[in-house]
Amino acid sequence: MTTATRLPTMEDILAARARLAGQVVRTPILRHPLLDQLTGGRILLKAEPLQRTGSFKLRGATSAIRALPEADRARGVVTFSSGNHGQAVACAAAAVGARATIFMPSDAPAIKVESTRRWGAEIVQYDRKTQDREAMASEHMARTGAVLVPPFDAVEVIAGQGSAALELAEDAGETLDALMVCTGGGGFIAGCALAMEAVSPQTRIVAVEPEGWDDTGRSLAAGERVAAKGGSLLCDALLAPKPGEMTFAINRRLLAAAIAVTDAEVLAAIAFAFRHLKVVVEPGGAVCLAALLAGKLDARGQTVGAMLSGGNIDPATFQRALATGNDSLGEGSDGR
Image (tube, rainbow, N blue to C red; front, side, top):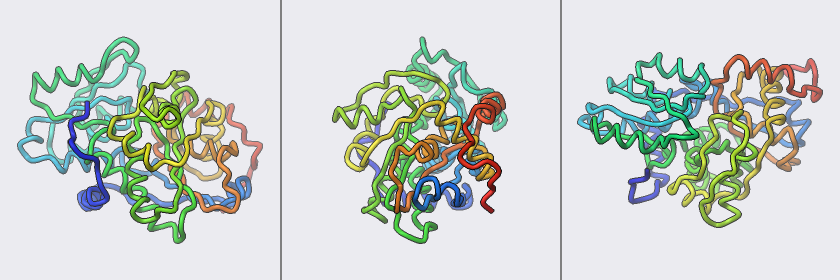
């Protein structure tokens, strides 16, 4: 559902960052000596679980909604989301007094549904296996005049997400050899890649996806957008069936590699983050840390930035991670 006639630029990212001033948290970098020891590198983790609404998605949603003319805001906004983007749109809409309608899959984690509703949005549930969320949103727009805020394939959304990479580059204190970004539809990594191209062009940009939902990796290999095979629903935030048209146009040019991680690796990363970094990370938000701990990126002698993209995890999944996550990597070390 892409309507833009151009791709975003660094100028869009800078304009988005100006709109975000005072609206989003400049999240910190987390480090741990055990993580550096295990990987052989200097690992800088961007802690977006500490963002308002608990994920990076607030950046893109706020950027897009605050860029809308008042007349468009007055008609209300609509989106489709498994949770984090929906919650972000609900929050950003509430901040400017706009109505928000969110189409959410019926199997979305309860914590994300409840948080989205708390911001005053109307939630319409759908079956992700049998119903077309974009068609449902289009019908709603035609009936109500509401304006779409896409999860990833939009100039202002991508530009807003890129602000996270700008912060990381500025706060790192040194040049990053690589930047790893959690990847679903590709908007987060597209914005980050555009930002890094401008401020640190030597930094390699690496996509990290859940096994079976590696549509960006498969598309990079094929040279065109191809669908994911599908698989486990654990990383619910990263289950886009295919890269966006706009995001892939950016990512096919700027990405250096793509990595896929297993459920077991993700659960181990969630446990590691809680026990050693003292932060709660959801499955989709933990994939970069999972790839690092599993040795799927050679970080030896490198300074590597990695996004922890969100922390909206349901209690049952969190308990599962703590029960099954392999913490033999450093039991009892708090590294502080």
